[in-house]
Length: 400
Image (cartoon, rainbow, N blue to C red; front, side, top):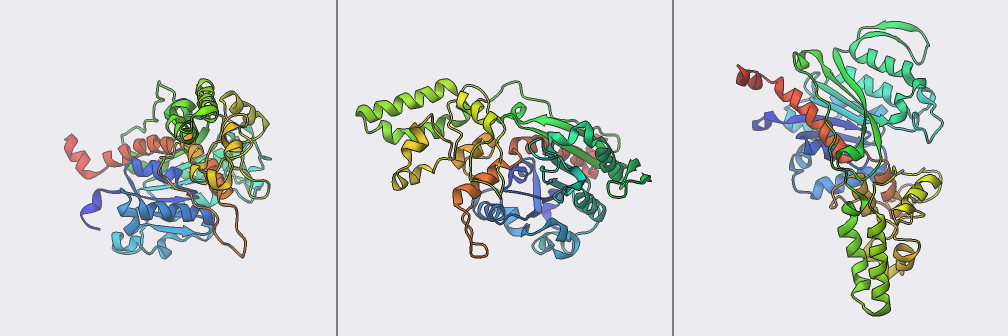
């Protein structure tokens, strides 16, 4: 490594379209690998890292791996990071291993099969911890993982990290685990709306730090903001831009557009319900089940679908549906803003696969709906970074 040795390095599994990656990047982490099985989300990561200012480190040193995390072998298959690390990644060398492991096994919207769901990747995440022994671990999931029915499963996860008695979820045998050398600093539910996200989106986040790194420090969970951001505040600029071409036409059409925009402003004074990404097997893009659609309607938003982007409105003649029928529908960009993404983050869709194509808008929206809000990842990442930097020799010398 060179003069950039002060960088905090990270690897993220189940990276999706980059929600967690953006937040951790904002917190000062430099990604060595982003692993994502979905081809559209992986294409989104490549597109933005290749084009965005501030991501120069990742362009040079980060592998974006479109593949199954069960096949991921970070100590033997990384390529770009070798130029930064000076060789293969070693145990205890990585600062942070992070991942938003799939939520369906624990989601209230699903069957909550937990360990019996083939999509449960907690075991794989823990195997990677054993393999890499990173200085810190961050695992994100839905609030459902904190339900009483999963208490035994959570106990097993904690025991794998810091030791203790727990029941093996596969064999059902209760045993003593020696742990991997970590202290679990908490498994907290953070509400996204407490951190500048205009949406009700509780996420369960586990943070564990190696005992020798933590030392006498205490990990401090981020404190909620006092001010809540509303849907109107978040979307005012983009919504005005969408209506402006019709307002500029003047006459009855212009007045109609002005009224529609003002009606939306008057209603969108609260925070949004939880965005859902939708199933790959069923349907296209909309903003959620009936209860969520009703909540969106109170905010002046038509949640029965996702609007075309403004540049496509005239070509597809979709303005009536997108803007004037029971309130405006959200564009993919607006849904991403509700999720906490920066406006400039682009989402890929319509990628060819086995002779088939998924409509771009549907593929893009599913990435947004399944994402971890960047502002939440940011504040948790900053709290982890503070401990990691505090454990460095130069920090200890400064305190002497």
